Length: 279
Ligand SMILES: [Zn+2]
Image (cartoon, rainbow, N blue to C red; front, top):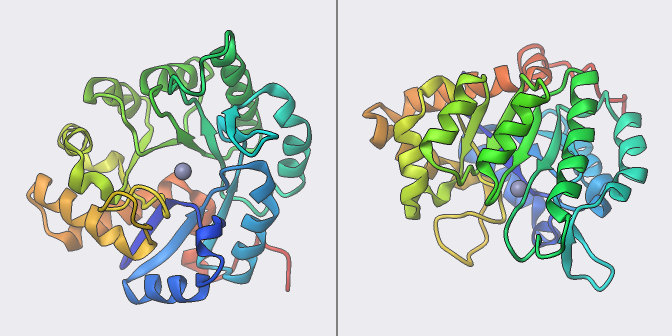
């Protein structure tokens, strides 16, 4: 397939409120064919669906409870099962519109897991969403910061067959365990400054690799807003590491993305989004 697919992007982030249309135009001009938009917090769910509806056929939504949620004092905290009370019925009621369940997963960064039991509560939240994904035959879009190995283990134990590990920060050995289970790994532009991501790409076979930007985070420069047009940077680095042309990396990763997210495949190949409501 011609063009890139950005498999993990936060376009509902307030950093895009002022210039989303320009960012989308810039992405199209940079040969991006599709972008998967994931929420970070529950209060972004409506906004994710809204912008994906506005740019239908180019933006594709996932919904899920991220392991880090906003706390009452507007700081951040570890996810707890009661976060699912409103979220699960919301997701179920929009299940036909989404291409995957995410961003979900585990975040064992010490800052979020200082409280006793918080890791287990995150596991419960993750597991319940794994069940929802299985029930509706949807792939998971997975966050696993400081929890690469446990996230892969949980998914294998729960019989997950379709998953994308985004910005995986574990070592290559643990990633290969996920690769053997059939999971994909999406590579962000910060590969340009991350030896760990470069080693990950070295280890993974091409049929497990996807592209992402995680915009506005994980760009080539720290503290600078990342945008989907930067997907080219991920592609160039993978091409260099694998000794392939950028063209081939683009084609292979986009074909992989359509396998990872079959509902997006239907749309991009038929031009008909049978999952969206008519305007
Ligand atoms: Zn993310």
